[in-house]
Length: 144
Image (cartoon, rainbow, N blue to C red; front, side, top):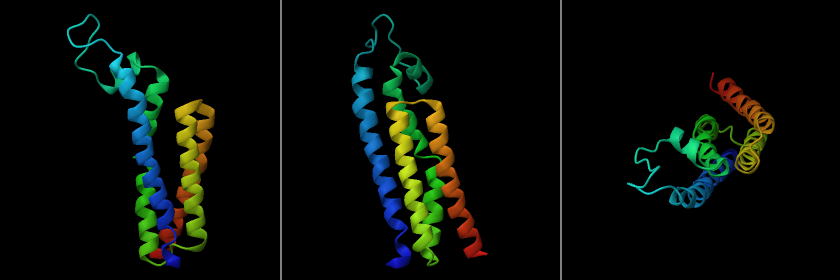
């Protein structure tokens, strides 16, 4: 299983994404429950993400935004990690880089969900992107 070590951080990030889903709903549902009900003054049955951003507390929306972000760049991570595992390159340095990527994405989630200061988010996103780029480069070199 040495070359499949990279699958461990894949599963951890997938599990983290599901935890963020739970946290998102645990935070948003009570906030939505406090909104005016249909037919009441100020009620809006056509709530969209943008409208919810305008009427829900930011701290309730931050988790939703992060949950969405966990379906963006990490999709590249999942694909490249599976490719590396399939071609026998999922151990060693690639597994270590994958763990760094996952750690940075979890840190990004926590930062965005609890603090949400852009400078910190940008740093964590940039560092995780560099780790992802390294994995992609390793996959390119191994496949071609």
